[in-house]
Image (cartoon, rainbow, N blue to C red; front, side, top):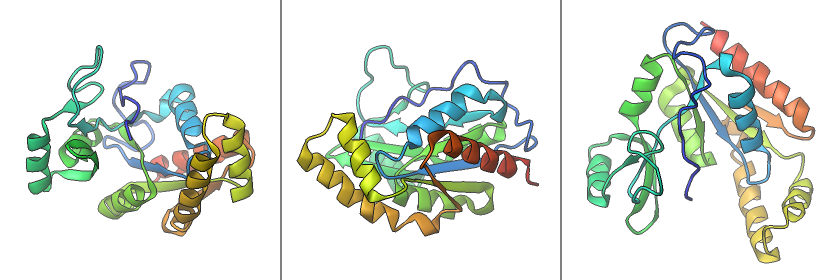
Length: 212
């Protein structure tokens, strides 16, 4: 689970939330693989800078790669530092992908971004999404991006041409499990038509950020 770098995009508006006031909100996205979640999130962040959306900057115990900088793509910690922060209950969520390879989000970092007026976006698995929503309550909106059917999800995964038949079956089995979490989210957006799903997601986020 080596996530894409969560850099703060330089083409975004200044760190104030024009729709919500001085303090930002939390927007949580979860979905089965192949549902189109990342496409929707990337579209929102690229095409709607007025929403002032920023990814949370995560921590990892892996070493920096290439030109990655501490505090930009990730906060880089040693495995022992990561474990100490777990023990101190400093993480909003974390995962040990395999031995000594951790990823997680610090509560204090999210609070810094919210205090700066940034609307913080989480692109997480279903359990992480439920837990983050539980932690933030009404300060957060959780969105589940759902494929129209498991059969359609199969068609999309096969159409990618990147997975073996065994990998596709494993993804579909995981997707069926993840779909059982959908009722625990604030909103379900069915991605039958991508453009419609984009606009529905945009509407929900605007309404959430405009709320008192």
